[in-house]
Image (cartoon, rainbow, N blue to C red; front, side, top):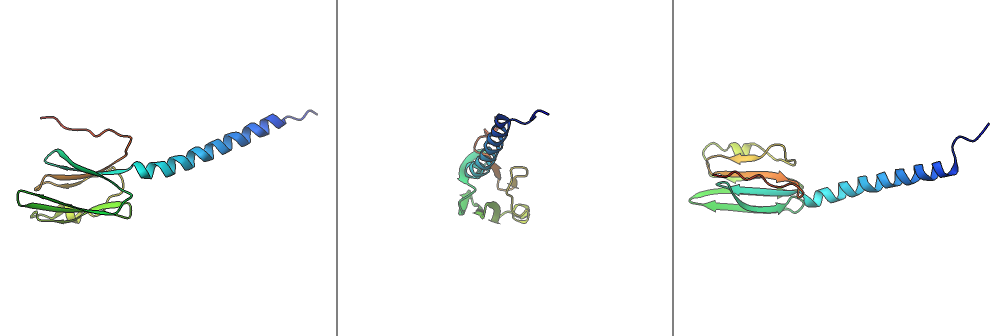
Length: 123
């Protein structure tokens, strides 16, 4: 009976497994560094900040105030002087699926991947 699995097949299998492991680890490590917090005020970009660095951003405009806190890979609206406080009660986000919106103050906080382009509405 002939040997079905040859030495070259085993080497090819090991190379493919190692390549898959390297690509998986690379994508996990690289993705966190590119994730950004995008803050827009009145439809204009106020700033972008890395999600991996803790930071407090105070947004003041025309008597309106919002405080956005980036902490432990998450972001939340810590304080706002709007009446309904929905943005503060929304809690923390860590993925790009749901933005934090303060409609009275026209502040939107979203998480974007550094490789994605930001959609901007035109008037």
